[in-house]
Image (cartoon, rainbow, N blue to C red; front, side):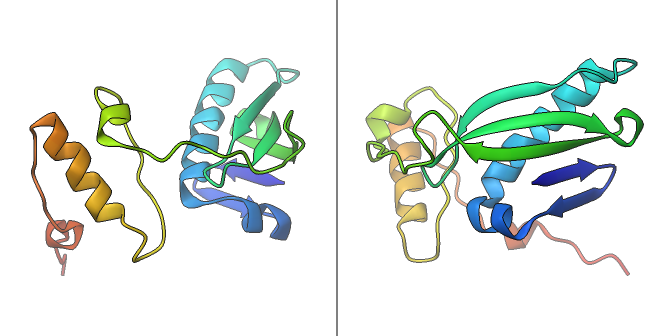
Amino acid sequence: MVAYGDGVTLVSDRAAELLEPFDHVRLRELTTELVGRGRGKPDISLVQDLFLLSGRSVTVRGRPVDGGCGVLFELAPGEAGGREVRHRPMTPELARGIPVYIGGKPGTGRTTLARSIAQAAGQVAVFDAADLLTVIP
């Protein structure tokens, strides 16, 4: 189970093992959608099959909680039975013209893949996100 509210995220141990940071981004987007649709409609809910970043298939059931300010999601094995689904490796040709999320542990080739996709598109701007941080006294 995962619950999102106004500045609060609660995650069960099982969901924490299953979800990557990008999966939370996707669930937050569903939260925004469900909260927006559910204003004044306490019986509204959402059921959707998702493929997680890991490749696992899950069925997500979401319903508003806390007076419609938050959403509680239940995760269950999806239509693929929760099995891992194999994906083709991302290549610059496949990524052309579509938004791409690149994630992974250090040393897995994230930067190399990002640069090859950007170079294939003819647009390369490389920066370190840490350089964007400013210290506020």
